[in-house]
Amino acid sequence: MTSNYDVRIWSIRKYKGKRATTYTVRWSVGGRAFPETFATSKLAESFRSKLLTAAREGVPFDESTGLPEPMARARNSRTWYEHACDFVDIKWPRASARHRKSIAEALANVTPALLATERGAPDPDELRRVLRTWSFNSKARHRVSSSEAPRAAQWAAQNTMKVSELADTAVIRRALDTLALTLDGKAAGATTIARKRAVFYGALRYAVERGLLEANPIDRVQWVTPKDAAEVDSRVVVNPQQARDLVAAVREVAPSLEAFFATIYYAGLRPAEVLHLREADCKLPDTGWGELLLTGSTQHVGEAWGDGDDAREDRGLKHRPRKDTRRVPACPDLVRVLRGHLETFGVQDGRLFVVRTGAFGTPTSKPYANAVSPVTYAAVWRKARARTLTEHQVASPLARRPYDLRHACVSLWLNAGVPATQVAEWAGHSVHVLMRVYAKCIYGQDEAARRRIEAALAAGGPRQTSGPA
Image (cartoon, rainbow, N blue to C red; front, side, top):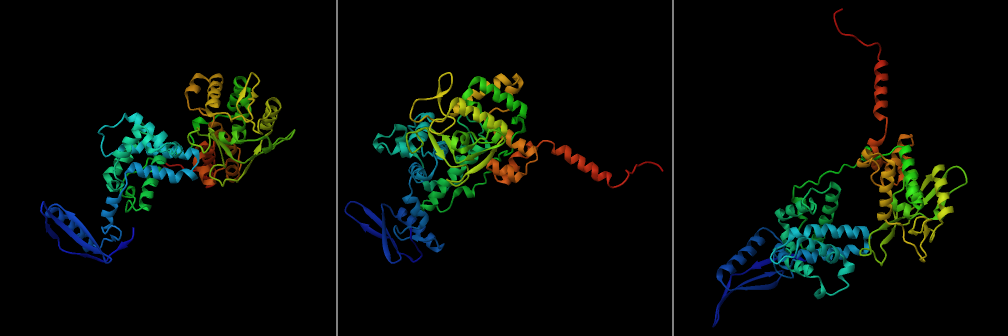
């Protein structure tokens, strides 16, 4: 959109024809003349008044349409559905499969709040399902022509607001309020709200980039995203004996996954990093400490969101360049478990933890065995908790997720006095994030602080007593 301030507006020209009389508004922008014809004088006068007001207020005019830029944006504006699909398409090539899914979920969540009408609308659940799995999935949408699109998608394409209408702050507030709720109308988690708001904000920022909006309307809405409690809940952290008992229970339930959970606990790895682990990345001496070289992570995202037909995706380490690596020490207990795993179960395609069959957990006979799925190891973990913990502990947050073993490991390192800089390096965090997330899991800080205060008071001399001399 090229702007110009050289605007001239002439009087209305009246034309009496054989069948009707018309009224034409004439003006020029940068020397180029533009006409607009109306059926009544009032419509023509109203339009000319808008041009005069814009010119007097110094509003730039678009050279291609001759209209003031706000009017040009409104006239040329696309529907929200078209814009959202375009936004997905530009993000798709460079986004990870998990991020693609996250974008689709956020846009499918907010789109029902941006409908121009509800007349003839499909079932709300069906509409959201089609938006998430087809409309906002470039891979699925590009497989068929628009005429073969699901009926719910065709309806949405014709009945969402113009992007220019999103400049109304009332519309934006309604959309943000929708993002803050789950499908059953309850308040969503703070992390979920922040993630979906970020996607919506990015889509509107792209509209500004395309000239469809003058500015991002979210910036003008006094709507505060709920704060997330970033700290780890100390109630999820198991002590070393509980961790050993849980890993031992896994050995009884699924022997081939004992080393998987042991690696999370003893080395502080994320589950996706453990799934990516290969035999060549493990330094496991006969005695003493070993070392694990982390080169990436294996994410399970579903076939619909990856570039190929595989349900998994190999990615780089979290928040690091694609080829970056991280070294983590392996304590003697972990070395022993990993050596036993390799001797008993072997590897497939160099990987330690793959889908296995049979009573002894042998790898599948396929040329390539998929990594263990989250559904599988989560089910094993539930059984291990039920065998190990009391009924009260099972109902509590204690080690509710396999990921909580990582929290227990990092907390153990900090409580053992390992410098925060070293713990952050092993865990793959910044020191700032480490201390913010795990501050409440460092045991004994309160008691140590009390002793230091008592020592400082004692150093000031004998206590003074009050009362009559």
